[in-house]
Length: 259
Ligand SMILES: [Zn+2]
Image (cartoon, rainbow, N blue to C red):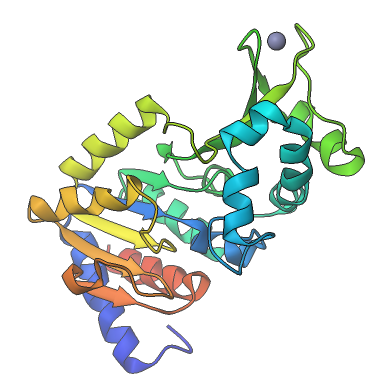
């Protein structure tokens, strides 16, 4: 744990102990885990490509329906950042924890596919994914890898290979329902878990922000790793405000070293 203060080291030891005792640990991640990979949080004021108010307007289902070109113009730099990003040390640390049997599921608010690319299994994507696009007319789903490079480089808006209609990324826009299957799976996972690790989420976006309450209500433990304060800091067993890309590898190492 080089470079971390001894007080932080003690907290990491305590957190690792909770992981070793847990029977059903899981992690909930938000935009903060991907910022070290260079992906801005478009839902947060000041850190995104646009101010939050503008993003809420453009990254919405109604803008997509009535002015898809405007939506795609806004989405293009974000898509570029996502396709050029790589998983960072925090994603990799979580994948290692999962591989060693210390994480039952990864619930994420991110659309960037970086958990899967780092090797995590059982990733529940609450806000959809950029991995696929769906046709607005015939509803066929297409792998986004077929379209994203041309879109990012030349601004070519993706159209359905079957019927020619415009494709919508399978990401959840403002004003759109959460994917039902993912939501049910996440609720069950949060109920069943006895330790929830929250990484890089300020727990401001409902209903995902309510998931840790299900764990707490059943006597489960909570560990929060986030730079800003969340409404559940007062109820967490441990709160870390360090950089996720430093903290998570140290925590994973501490959990695994005692195996
Ligand atoms: Zn189609």
